Length: 182
Image 1 (cartoon, rainbow, N blue to C red):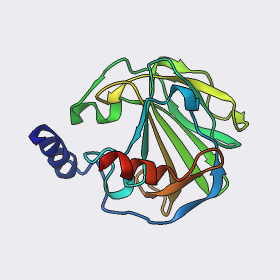
Image 2: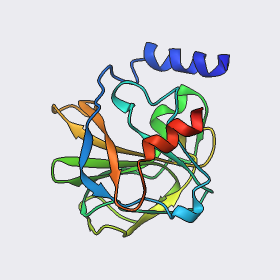
Image 3: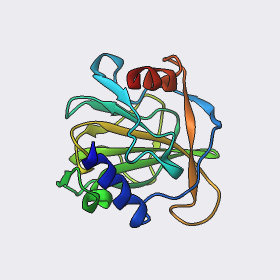
């Protein structure tokens, strides 16, 4: 457990997470971004899901699992050229990701495999549309999909809070996470 505490301390010292949080739920009901039958476990990392990431969710799935748009929107950002990762904060910015804008909320999907994204910036996506394949790039212990619903409050890349995600096809995911911790 000391390894986790050290990593948590590094993230705070390097200002990689912001001291902003929210207890609000998303206004949109999303679908699960990965096939339910492929989910090994759903967690919220006590190391990285702090501050403005406090409501982020990790879906532990095998590498190469299909990732789908959780709602209709437009792809506003992505990165898919990283082929490195590990459990060290030096990999924080190495995760491959997609950000989709949905009206006043955005969703972020991270840790895609190298060149594993099948959409591009500017694409209009439909709920349930394939956007890529899971991996373990960036700050990751193993293969999973990091998912968060973001609400921006400023103009900077880090000026956001994560909202609690509401899912159409799954009971309260945060209760599932709380049960897995006890």
